[in-house]
Amino acid sequence: MNIHEYQAKELLRQYKVATPDGRVAVDAENARQITKEFGGQSVVKAQIHAGGRGKGGGVKFAKNPDEAAELFKKMLGMTLVTHQTGAEGRKVHTVFISNPVDIEKELYLAFLVDRGSSRITLMASTEGGVEIEEVAEKTPEKIVKVVIDPAIGLSGFQARQAAFALGLSGDAFKKAVTFLQNLYRLFVEKDCAMVEINPLVITKQGDVVALDAKIGFDDNALFRHPDVLAYRDLNEEAPEEVEASKFNLNFIKLDGNIGCMVNGAGLAMGTMDIIKYHGGSPANFLDVGGGATEEAVKNAFRIILGDKEVKAVLVNIFGGIMRCDIVANGIVKAAKEIGITVPVVVRLEGTNVEEGKKILAESGYNLIVGNDLKDAAEKVVASVK
Ligand code: ADP
Ligand code: MG
Image (cartoon, rainbow, N blue to C red; front, side):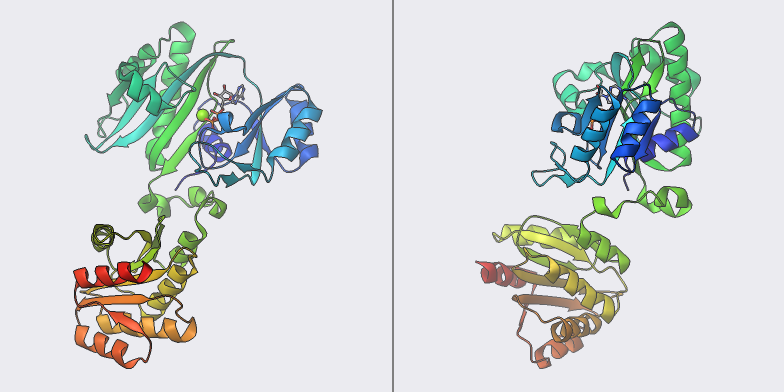
């Protein structure tokens, strides 16, 4: 799960990680008021779960309180397109007013879980403010990686190594070391997957502050953090994915036209591969999991059919714990209650497969049976051609 910059900064403050003062404005008048409190100038920042806002027009400097109010009005409700949002962009529901900072240097800093070493890794670079992917491609030597031993944590010498690599000295060096240690504590205690500070700024006054903050959390650990879960913003998630999560179903939106209902993530991958192999393209996949009920299968169908791109559906179920007759009954229920408007190809295998096939055959609905996975894939691809 990801959160907004303003929420990330609330967490930073809890952990005594320095960040400029800032508040969410509820309306234009409030934006004006906050800017006054900051001494008459502010930075007005659109809150969406995507980076590159600066270049896309989502971060603007206000020279006076009236300008802040104007910028607030323009930004709220606008569709912001950045290189991370895709062409459709994201609607701005929240606007954050930040105290401006006199920037001396923009640096880059991140903690993330490195799968290669299975350890939390600190990444630091003097090339802040720009996309780190670009730095990694063109000047990889400018990124320093520090791998952290989980039993020891971020040790003093490692924090100093990173601060040194950032080209810091004197007071800023000491402040950066404290900054890193507090940020690492946040990362571990809140079960983060990624914390990115870009830019980390050295101010003209010599302070070290997080000007931007992006935090992602390990979804499997969210149950331990109700405070973090409260930050969830459903506006930032695909509506179908939100709907599916209500029924403990996993829905992933893709860009083709064949809807896929499967059980298990591995089978989902295999199903998508075989659709592609036969010249088709998946619109989504919905994983009903191991022990879904008829009701869940019906809802899965409703969600798949709710995707306007879907021109046909492939149901590919391997009945292990999941029983094929339950799947078949769920499909028939969906046909009865929701109506099925596109070709549906069903391939069932495993526990109670004969009962399942019988239920489908006797249902009176036009459900196409796939004799095996290859046959099913060919039939579903042919149905959209
Ligand atoms: P994004 O990464 O989405 O583009 P940032 O928060 O990093 O958004 O802002 C983009 C740029 O805007 C920063 O690199 C910085 O130069 C400037 N900026 C952002 N917030 C402030 C601030 N409080 N004071 C001064 N400049 C800022
Ligand atoms: Mg940034």
